[in-house]
Length: 426
Image (cartoon, rainbow, N blue to C red; front, top):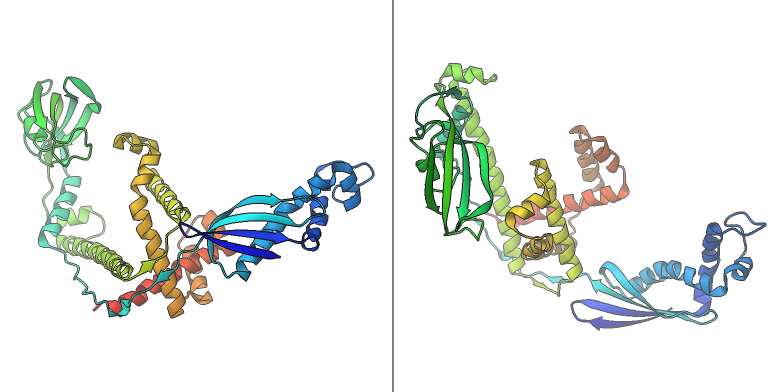
Protein backbone atom coordinates (compact mmCIF):
# COMPACT_ATOMS: atom_id res chain seq x y z
CA UNK A 1 0.00 0.00 0.00
CA UNK A 2 1.36 3.37 -1.04
CA UNK A 3 0.36 6.42 0.99
CA UNK A 4 1.05 10.02 0.03
CA UNK A 5 0.25 12.69 2.64
CA UNK A 6 -0.39 16.33 1.81
CA UNK A 7 -0.89 19.02 4.47
CA UNK A 8 -3.93 21.25 3.93
CA UNK A 9 -5.10 24.51 5.60
CA UNK A 10 -7.29 24.44 8.74
CA UNK A 11 -5.35 21.51 10.18
CA UNK A 12 -6.52 19.05 7.53
CA UNK A 13 -4.57 16.46 5.55
CA UNK A 14 -5.13 14.73 2.24
CA UNK A 15 -4.09 11.10 1.91
CA UNK A 16 -3.76 9.53 -1.52
CA UNK A 17 -3.83 5.77 -0.97
CA UNK A 18 -2.95 3.25 -3.67
CA UNK A 19 -3.74 -0.45 -3.33
CA UNK A 20 -2.03 -2.93 -5.62
CA UNK A 21 -4.06 -5.59 -7.39
CA UNK A 22 -2.80 -8.19 -4.90
CA UNK A 23 -3.85 -5.96 -1.97
CA UNK A 24 -7.33 -5.36 -3.39
CA UNK A 25 -8.21 -8.90 -4.45
CA UNK A 26 -8.89 -10.19 -0.87
CA UNK A 27 -11.87 -7.82 -0.69
CA UNK A 28 -13.52 -9.19 -3.85
CA UNK A 29 -14.68 -12.49 -2.34
CA UNK A 30 -16.57 -10.92 0.62
CA UNK A 31 -17.97 -8.29 -1.77
CA UNK A 32 -19.33 -11.03 -4.04
CA UNK A 33 -20.85 -12.80 -1.05
CA UNK A 34 -22.59 -9.61 0.02
CA UNK A 35 -24.03 -9.17 -3.47
CA UNK A 36 -25.20 -12.80 -3.61
CA UNK A 37 -27.10 -12.30 -0.34
CA UNK A 38 -29.10 -9.50 -1.92
CA UNK A 39 -30.01 -11.11 -5.27
CA UNK A 40 -31.55 -14.41 -6.33
CA UNK A 41 -29.28 -16.80 -8.20
CA UNK A 42 -30.96 -20.01 -9.44
CA UNK A 43 -29.45 -23.13 -7.87
CA UNK A 44 -27.74 -21.26 -5.01
CA UNK A 45 -28.84 -20.31 -1.52
CA UNK A 46 -28.35 -16.62 -0.57
CA UNK A 47 -24.66 -15.88 0.01
CA UNK A 48 -23.44 -19.24 -1.32
CA UNK A 49 -22.64 -18.47 -4.97
CA UNK A 50 -18.93 -18.29 -5.89
CA UNK A 51 -17.05 -15.21 -7.03
CA UNK A 52 -17.04 -16.42 -10.66
CA UNK A 53 -20.80 -17.07 -10.66
CA UNK A 54 -21.49 -13.60 -9.23
CA UNK A 55 -19.13 -12.09 -11.79
CA UNK A 56 -21.13 -13.72 -14.60
CA UNK A 57 -24.41 -12.56 -13.03
CA UNK A 58 -23.70 -8.86 -12.24
CA UNK A 59 -20.39 -8.13 -13.94
CA UNK A 60 -16.90 -7.56 -12.57
CA UNK A 61 -17.35 -3.78 -12.24
CA UNK A 62 -20.12 -4.13 -9.66
CA UNK A 63 -18.03 -6.51 -7.54
CA UNK A 64 -15.08 -4.13 -7.58
CA UNK A 65 -17.39 -1.26 -6.66
CA UNK A 66 -18.89 -3.25 -3.76
CA UNK A 67 -15.41 -4.18 -2.51
CA UNK A 68 -14.38 -0.53 -2.28
CA UNK A 69 -16.21 0.18 0.99
CA UNK A 70 -14.65 -2.87 2.63
CA UNK A 71 -11.19 -1.94 1.37
CA UNK A 72 -11.42 1.69 2.50
CA UNK A 73 -12.69 0.73 5.95
CA UNK A 74 -9.62 -1.42 6.56
CA UNK A 75 -6.85 0.34 4.63
CA UNK A 76 -7.69 3.89 5.70
CA UNK A 77 -7.20 3.04 9.39
CA UNK A 78 -3.98 1.22 8.50
CA UNK A 79 -2.73 4.28 6.62
CA UNK A 80 -3.46 6.54 9.60
CA UNK A 81 -1.56 4.18 11.89
CA UNK A 82 1.42 3.97 9.53
CA UNK A 83 1.58 7.75 9.18
CA UNK A 84 1.00 8.29 12.92
CA UNK A 85 -1.96 10.61 12.27
CA UNK A 86 -4.49 11.38 15.01
CA UNK A 87 -7.69 12.38 13.21
CA UNK A 88 -11.14 13.57 14.18
CA UNK A 89 -14.42 13.16 12.34
CA UNK A 90 -15.23 11.17 9.24
CA UNK A 91 -12.99 11.40 6.18
CA UNK A 92 -14.22 12.75 2.88
CA UNK A 93 -13.50 10.04 0.32
CA UNK A 94 -13.01 10.53 -3.43
CA UNK A 95 -12.24 7.63 -5.77
CA UNK A 96 -9.33 8.45 -8.08
CA UNK A 97 -9.04 5.13 -9.92
CA UNK A 98 -11.21 2.01 -9.84
CA UNK A 99 -10.95 -0.39 -12.79
CA UNK A 100 -10.89 -4.22 -12.69
CA UNK A 101 -7.39 -5.64 -13.04
CA UNK A 102 -5.66 -2.38 -12.01
CA UNK A 103 -4.39 -0.80 -8.80
CA UNK A 104 -7.09 1.08 -6.86
CA UNK A 105 -6.46 4.68 -5.84
CA UNK A 106 -8.61 6.81 -3.54
CA UNK A 107 -8.19 10.16 -1.83
CA UNK A 108 -9.19 10.80 1.79
CA UNK A 109 -9.45 14.31 3.26
CA UNK A 110 -9.67 14.38 7.03
CA UNK A 111 -9.16 16.77 9.95
CA UNK A 112 -6.29 16.22 12.36
CA UNK A 113 -6.84 16.25 16.09
CA UNK A 114 -5.36 19.64 17.07
CA UNK A 115 -2.15 19.50 19.06
CA UNK A 116 -1.84 21.49 22.26
CA UNK A 117 1.38 22.93 23.63
CA UNK A 118 1.00 23.39 27.37
CA UNK A 119 2.61 26.42 28.94
CA UNK A 120 4.24 26.46 32.33
CA UNK A 121 0.82 26.11 33.94
CA UNK A 122 2.17 24.70 37.21
CA UNK A 123 3.41 28.16 38.12
CA UNK A 124 -0.15 29.48 38.08
CA UNK A 125 -1.44 30.32 41.55
CA UNK A 126 -5.12 30.90 42.23
CA UNK A 127 -6.64 32.00 45.51
CA UNK A 128 -9.88 30.28 46.41
CA UNK A 129 -12.62 32.70 47.35
CA UNK A 130 -14.71 31.70 50.36
CA UNK A 131 -18.34 30.85 49.73
CA UNK A 132 -20.46 33.33 51.66
CA UNK A 133 -24.09 33.31 52.73
CA UNK A 134 -25.31 36.75 53.74
CA UNK A 135 -27.99 37.44 56.30
CA UNK A 136 -30.11 39.11 53.60
CA UNK A 137 -30.13 35.87 51.59
CA UNK A 138 -31.40 33.89 54.58
CA UNK A 139 -34.00 36.56 55.27
CA UNK A 140 -35.21 36.51 51.67
CA UNK A 141 -35.41 32.70 51.57
CA UNK A 142 -37.52 32.71 54.74
CA UNK A 143 -39.71 35.48 53.32
CA UNK A 144 -40.22 33.50 50.10
CA UNK A 145 -41.19 30.43 52.13
CA UNK A 146 -43.61 32.54 54.16
CA UNK A 147 -45.23 33.92 50.98
CA UNK A 148 -45.64 30.41 49.61
CA UNK A 149 -47.74 29.53 52.69
CA UNK A 150 -49.82 32.72 52.56
CA UNK A 151 -53.62 32.46 52.56
CA UNK A 152 -55.63 34.22 49.83
CA UNK A 153 -58.93 36.00 50.44
CA UNK A 154 -61.00 37.51 47.63
CA UNK A 155 -61.78 41.11 48.65
CA UNK A 156 -64.06 43.84 47.31
CA UNK A 157 -61.76 46.85 47.48
CA UNK A 158 -59.08 48.69 45.58
CA UNK A 159 -55.75 46.94 45.11
CA UNK A 160 -52.70 47.80 47.16
CA UNK A 161 -49.08 46.70 47.41
CA UNK A 162 -48.81 43.12 48.67
CA UNK A 163 -52.09 42.01 47.12
CA UNK A 164 -52.39 39.26 44.58
CA UNK A 165 -54.43 40.41 41.59
CA UNK A 166 -55.73 38.98 38.33
CA UNK A 167 -55.67 41.33 35.35
CA UNK A 168 -56.35 41.46 31.64
CA UNK A 169 -53.75 43.50 29.82
CA UNK A 170 -52.59 44.38 26.32
CA UNK A 171 -49.48 46.18 25.15
CA UNK A 172 -48.80 48.01 21.89
CA UNK A 173 -45.93 49.92 20.32
CA UNK A 174 -46.84 52.76 17.95
CA UNK A 175 -50.44 51.48 18.07
CA UNK A 176 -49.37 48.02 16.84
CA UNK A 177 -50.13 45.18 19.31
CA UNK A 178 -47.01 43.48 20.60
CA UNK A 179 -46.50 39.80 19.86
CA UNK A 180 -47.32 37.86 23.08
CA UNK A 181 -48.25 41.24 24.61
CA UNK A 182 -51.77 40.27 25.63
CA UNK A 183 -53.07 38.11 28.48
CA UNK A 184 -56.28 37.43 30.39
CA UNK A 185 -56.71 36.66 34.10
CA UNK A 186 -52.97 37.08 34.55
CA UNK A 187 -51.94 36.48 38.22
CA UNK A 188 -49.58 39.02 39.75
CA UNK A 189 -48.44 39.96 43.26
CA UNK A 190 -48.08 43.73 43.46
CA UNK A 191 -44.69 44.75 44.81
CA UNK A 192 -42.66 41.68 43.84
CA UNK A 193 -41.22 43.38 40.76
CA UNK A 194 -41.99 40.56 38.33
CA UNK A 195 -43.04 43.01 35.57
CA UNK A 196 -41.05 45.83 34.01
CA UNK A 197 -40.27 48.71 36.41
CA UNK A 198 -43.29 50.91 37.07
CA UNK A 199 -45.98 48.49 35.88
CA UNK A 200 -47.05 47.30 39.32
CA UNK A 201 -47.20 50.86 40.66
CA UNK A 202 -49.70 51.70 37.89
CA UNK A 203 -52.18 49.01 38.94
CA UNK A 204 -52.40 50.08 42.59
CA UNK A 205 -55.79 51.56 43.61
CA UNK A 206 -57.79 49.69 40.99
CA UNK A 207 -61.00 47.91 41.99
CA UNK A 208 -62.62 44.99 40.16
CA UNK A 209 -63.72 45.88 36.58
CA UNK A 210 -61.81 49.18 36.64
CA UNK A 211 -59.53 49.88 33.67
CA UNK A 212 -56.46 52.03 33.20
CA UNK A 213 -54.39 53.16 30.23
CA UNK A 214 -50.79 54.20 30.75
CA UNK A 215 -47.36 54.30 29.11
CA UNK A 216 -44.04 52.85 30.30
CA UNK A 217 -40.52 52.98 28.90
CA UNK A 218 -38.87 49.56 28.70
CA UNK A 219 -35.38 49.26 30.26
CA UNK A 220 -32.42 49.86 27.95
CA UNK A 221 -31.07 46.38 28.75
CA UNK A 222 -34.39 44.59 28.11
CA UNK A 223 -33.83 41.13 26.61
CA UNK A 224 -36.08 41.83 23.60
CA UNK A 225 -33.92 44.34 21.74
CA UNK A 226 -36.85 45.63 19.67
CA UNK A 227 -38.46 46.87 22.92
CA UNK A 228 -35.36 48.10 24.78
CA UNK A 229 -35.74 51.80 25.60
CA UNK A 230 -39.11 52.03 23.78
CA UNK A 231 -42.26 53.76 25.08
CA UNK A 232 -45.05 51.16 25.17
CA UNK A 233 -48.80 51.68 25.64
CA UNK A 234 -50.61 49.47 28.16
CA UNK A 235 -54.30 48.87 28.71
CA UNK A 236 -55.18 47.05 31.96
CA UNK A 237 -58.46 45.78 33.42
CA UNK A 238 -58.63 44.60 37.03
CA UNK A 239 -60.43 41.24 37.27
CA UNK A 240 -59.94 40.27 40.92
CA UNK A 241 -58.16 41.40 44.09
CA UNK A 242 -56.94 38.93 46.72
CA UNK A 243 -55.61 39.88 50.13
CA UNK A 244 -52.58 37.82 51.11
CA UNK A 245 -52.24 37.02 54.80
CA UNK A 246 -48.78 35.83 55.76
CA UNK A 247 -48.42 33.24 58.52
CA UNK A 248 -46.45 34.19 61.63
CA UNK A 249 -42.86 32.91 61.66
CA UNK A 250 -43.04 30.81 64.79
CA UNK A 251 -42.81 27.20 65.95
CA UNK A 252 -46.36 26.48 64.70
CA UNK A 253 -45.30 27.63 61.24
CA UNK A 254 -42.26 25.33 61.42
CA UNK A 255 -44.42 22.35 62.43
CA UNK A 256 -46.81 23.04 59.53
CA UNK A 257 -43.93 22.31 57.15
CA UNK A 258 -44.00 18.73 58.40
CA UNK A 259 -40.34 18.08 59.25
CA UNK A 260 -39.35 20.62 61.90
CA UNK A 261 -39.93 20.88 65.66
CA UNK A 262 -39.37 24.62 65.93
CA UNK A 263 -38.60 27.69 63.84
CA UNK A 264 -34.91 27.64 64.77
CA UNK A 265 -34.58 24.35 62.87
CA UNK A 266 -36.16 25.98 59.80
CA UNK A 267 -33.62 28.81 59.90
CA UNK A 268 -30.75 26.35 60.31
CA UNK A 269 -31.94 24.19 57.41
CA UNK A 270 -32.31 27.18 55.12
CA UNK A 271 -28.84 28.37 56.09
CA UNK A 272 -27.36 24.93 55.40
CA UNK A 273 -29.08 24.73 51.99
CA UNK A 274 -27.87 28.18 50.98
CA UNK A 275 -24.36 27.30 52.16
CA UNK A 276 -24.40 24.11 50.05
CA UNK A 277 -25.60 26.08 47.01
CA UNK A 278 -22.92 28.73 47.57
CA UNK A 279 -20.20 26.07 47.87
CA UNK A 280 -21.40 24.39 44.68
CA UNK A 281 -21.38 27.68 42.72
CA UNK A 282 -18.01 28.65 44.21
CA UNK A 283 -16.48 25.32 43.18
CA UNK A 284 -17.88 25.64 39.66
CA UNK A 285 -16.46 29.16 39.32
CA UNK A 286 -13.11 27.97 40.70
CA UNK A 287 -12.88 25.08 38.21
CA UNK A 288 -13.76 27.41 35.35
CA UNK A 289 -11.09 29.90 36.48
CA UNK A 290 -8.48 27.11 36.74
CA UNK A 291 -9.18 25.86 33.20
CA UNK A 292 -9.29 29.42 31.80
CA UNK A 293 -5.90 30.24 33.34
CA UNK A 294 -4.35 27.05 31.93
CA UNK A 295 -5.82 27.77 28.47
CA UNK A 296 -4.24 31.23 28.54
CA UNK A 297 -0.81 29.54 28.85
CA UNK A 298 -1.41 27.16 25.91
CA UNK A 299 -0.97 27.35 22.17
CA UNK A 300 -3.28 25.39 19.89
CA UNK A 301 -3.15 24.14 16.33
CA UNK A 302 -6.05 25.27 14.15
CA UNK A 303 -9.20 23.73 15.60
CA UNK A 304 -11.12 21.86 12.88
CA UNK A 305 -14.65 23.02 12.10
CA UNK A 306 -15.91 19.49 12.77
CA UNK A 307 -15.06 19.86 16.49
CA UNK A 308 -16.70 23.28 16.80
CA UNK A 309 -19.78 22.12 14.87
CA UNK A 310 -20.08 19.00 17.02
CA UNK A 311 -19.88 21.05 20.22
CA UNK A 312 -22.43 23.66 19.08
CA UNK A 313 -24.81 20.85 18.12
CA UNK A 314 -24.33 19.34 21.58
CA UNK A 315 -25.04 22.71 23.22
CA UNK A 316 -28.30 23.11 21.28
CA UNK A 317 -29.32 19.58 22.30
CA UNK A 318 -28.50 20.37 25.95
CA UNK A 319 -30.63 23.51 25.76
CA UNK A 320 -33.52 21.59 24.20
CA UNK A 321 -33.24 18.93 26.93
CA UNK A 322 -33.24 21.55 29.71
CA UNK A 323 -36.23 23.35 28.18
CA UNK A 324 -38.19 20.10 27.95
CA UNK A 325 -37.73 19.60 31.71
CA UNK A 326 -39.40 22.99 32.18
CA UNK A 327 -42.28 22.00 29.93
CA UNK A 328 -41.03 24.22 27.11
CA UNK A 329 -40.25 23.58 23.45
CA UNK A 330 -37.19 24.79 21.57
CA UNK A 331 -39.35 26.24 18.78
CA UNK A 332 -41.27 28.38 21.29
CA UNK A 333 -38.00 29.49 22.88
CA UNK A 334 -36.64 30.48 19.47
CA UNK A 335 -39.85 32.36 18.67
CA UNK A 336 -39.46 34.28 21.95
CA UNK A 337 -35.89 35.20 21.01
CA UNK A 338 -36.96 35.94 17.42
CA UNK A 339 -34.13 33.74 16.16
CA UNK A 340 -33.76 30.73 13.91
CA UNK A 341 -32.06 27.56 15.07
CA UNK A 342 -29.09 28.39 12.81
CA UNK A 343 -28.77 31.84 14.39
CA UNK A 344 -28.87 30.33 17.88
CA UNK A 345 -26.22 27.80 16.87
CA UNK A 346 -24.02 30.61 15.58
CA UNK A 347 -24.37 32.41 18.92
CA UNK A 348 -23.01 29.29 20.63
CA UNK A 349 -19.80 29.19 18.55
CA UNK A 350 -17.55 31.23 20.92
CA UNK A 351 -18.59 29.16 23.95
CA UNK A 352 -18.27 25.96 21.90
CA UNK A 353 -14.70 26.91 20.92
CA UNK A 354 -13.89 27.49 24.60
CA UNK A 355 -15.36 24.10 25.56
CA UNK A 356 -13.32 22.39 22.83
CA UNK A 357 -10.13 24.05 24.07
CA UNK A 358 -10.94 22.95 27.62
CA UNK A 359 -11.37 19.36 26.46
CA UNK A 360 -8.10 19.50 24.49
CA UNK A 361 -6.21 20.85 27.50
CA UNK A 362 -7.64 18.18 29.81
CA UNK A 363 -6.77 15.49 27.26
CA UNK A 364 -3.19 16.73 26.96
CA UNK A 365 -2.64 16.98 30.72
CA UNK A 366 -4.15 13.51 31.11
CA UNK A 367 -1.58 12.17 28.62
CA UNK A 368 1.40 14.01 30.08
CA UNK A 369 0.61 13.32 33.74
CA UNK A 370 -0.66 9.77 33.10
CA UNK A 371 -3.98 10.58 34.75
CA UNK A 372 -6.65 8.06 33.79
CA UNK A 373 -9.76 6.56 35.28
CA UNK A 374 -9.08 3.07 36.57
CA UNK A 375 -11.32 0.07 35.94
CA UNK A 376 -12.21 0.07 39.63
CA UNK A 377 -13.32 3.72 39.47
CA UNK A 378 -15.46 3.04 36.39
CA UNK A 379 -17.11 0.05 38.08
CA UNK A 380 -17.74 2.13 41.21
CA UNK A 381 -19.41 4.82 39.11
CA UNK A 382 -21.61 2.22 37.43
CA UNK A 383 -22.64 0.94 40.88
CA UNK A 384 -23.63 4.48 41.88
CA UNK A 385 -25.69 4.92 38.72
CA UNK A 386 -27.57 1.64 39.11
CA UNK A 387 -28.06 2.19 42.86
CA UNK A 388 -29.47 5.69 42.31
CA UNK A 389 -32.64 4.26 40.80
CA UNK A 390 -31.77 5.27 37.24
CA UNK A 391 -34.31 4.10 34.66
CA UNK A 392 -33.82 0.76 32.94
CA UNK A 393 -32.59 2.40 29.73
CA UNK A 394 -29.64 4.00 31.54
CA UNK A 395 -28.97 0.80 33.50
CA UNK A 396 -28.82 -1.17 30.25
CA UNK A 397 -26.38 1.35 28.80
CA UNK A 398 -23.90 0.74 31.61
CA UNK A 399 -23.23 -2.72 30.18
CA UNK A 400 -22.14 -1.35 26.80
CA UNK A 401 -18.44 -0.85 26.09
CA UNK A 402 -19.13 2.51 24.41
CA UNK A 403 -20.91 3.83 27.52
CA UNK A 404 -18.09 2.60 29.74
CA UNK A 405 -15.63 4.44 27.49
CA UNK A 406 -17.77 7.56 27.93
CA UNK A 407 -17.69 7.12 31.73
CA UNK A 408 -13.93 6.64 31.59
CA UNK A 409 -13.62 9.93 29.71
CA UNK A 410 -15.84 11.80 32.20
CA UNK A 411 -14.04 10.37 35.24
CA UNK A 412 -10.62 11.09 33.73
CA UNK A 413 -11.61 14.71 33.09
CA UNK A 414 -12.81 14.98 36.67
CA UNK A 415 -9.49 13.62 37.96
CA UNK A 416 -7.53 16.06 35.80
CA UNK A 417 -9.55 19.02 37.11
CA UNK A 418 -9.03 17.80 40.69
CA UNK A 419 -5.30 17.50 39.97
CA UNK A 420 -5.20 21.07 38.65
CA UNK A 421 -7.06 22.40 41.67
CA UNK A 422 -4.71 20.64 44.06
CA UNK A 423 -1.71 21.98 42.13
CA UNK A 424 -2.76 25.56 41.36
CA UNK A 425 -5.19 26.61 44.10
CA UNK A 426 -4.00 27.86 47.46
